[in-house]
Length: 295
Length: 251
Ligand SMILES: Nc1ncnc2c1ncn2[C@@H]1O[C@H](COP(=O)(O)OP(=O)(O)OP(=O)(O)O)[C@@H](O)[C@H]1O
Ligand SMILES: [Mg+2]
Image (spheres, rainbow over the protein chains, first blue to last red):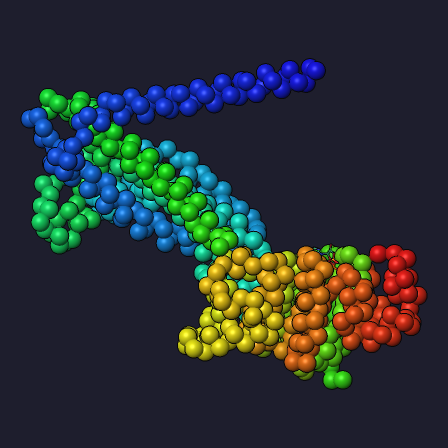
């Protein structure tokens, strides 16, 4: 009887806490969307910001965020996959491997502002990449790589041993077994994780303040030569992303409608991150079903 | 009968654990050899030395030699991948890849370098015919391998192993996860295949060993207690422990 009561009390506390978390989250999202949604328009999403006049948009910032995301993933995914494959399949089970694993864990819990400062000192100044998309992408890679490595490692470890052995027993090399059996099987996990990591990149501000910078040159959206200084595609130009832009106009925006712009930009950011999350889950489930399909 | 596998003074250690003790035996070509014995006595371990699947387990150490067609497969010149092409394996649980029936069979040949579509079609058909599965699946080769029954999946795995043209087929309790009818089908299949392949099967089921094999090997605690023609081993065992085991007094 007493155990039963205790169980009931514990259950209700857990439910109450869970409900509270959901409520806070829903309230937060609802508030951001309520304040910002009204301000979102095609014009707002595509036009350049204004410094002192009303009616500025977030076009370049949105573009910068997407471009930075692509650049970061271009660097993170190959390195992360490679490292994850190594950790899961090739690294011997010894102290050094465990040490690497520990470092990866530590790296993933470094506050992003520290990653940003590290980027400023090493990438921007020491290596002379300046405030640029490239510096930003490298800083975000530092920030994202641990996640990517861990996801790949988990994905590969989750492949049933029988299927790995089936491939090896057919006389296929370890590498071919990894690329043609194990990676496809773990693809739902790896892809879901990659998209979640991408969502993190999209919302990140602190690591970018001192690496990608807080301003953009006047972009010329007719010039797609990645080497010219005003081309949107030039990876060595400074670039203010959406998240950084929100931070900036909130703290020092001069435009009369700064508050609305911040609200609208926040809503766009939140919606995008949500899309990433739901997209990742949907794709993961879809692929899982496709691979194990009974049809 | 010619022997194709010869095992000389083989010892195998998993770290400190002495899993195979001084094994000596010969396995005849183009016949079925059954490994019987209580759980944990080393049947799988010995079977997996034939295609060096034990290599993957860290801390495994081997002494003595295993010769296949006169070559010591643990010598330095031997390429493990080539060896495994010659020595196919079927596992306890059916383990098709999450791919179509066709791609499961074509997987090995493809990655071994065959890209010609016609040639692949041919390999898929002959392998499925050899595994007595062709008539059941020929109209839906593009379907997922998980869409067929467990027994069919196991025959698919046999076909997949045959597709890389092995000489030897290892089966580790390949029927223990199957229903009686599927089991019977696989046994019949093994009978047909033994004219072209050397088959070594581990089984928990003494009746199965008696039904399908020509030679039987009895293991106990990592040792080979006795091996001989199946009929003789079951009717007239020379070792007391064999007699106790086959008459059901232990194990
Ligand atoms: N990777 C391993 N590391 C350490 N010991 C192992 C390992 N694999 C097997 N063993 C041990 O080696 C012995 C023989 O194992 P094996 O799997 O060959 O037995 P088996 O005869 O196939 O048994 P079963 O009929 O249950 O499949 C067992 O005592 C087992 O515990
Ligand atoms: Mg076994």
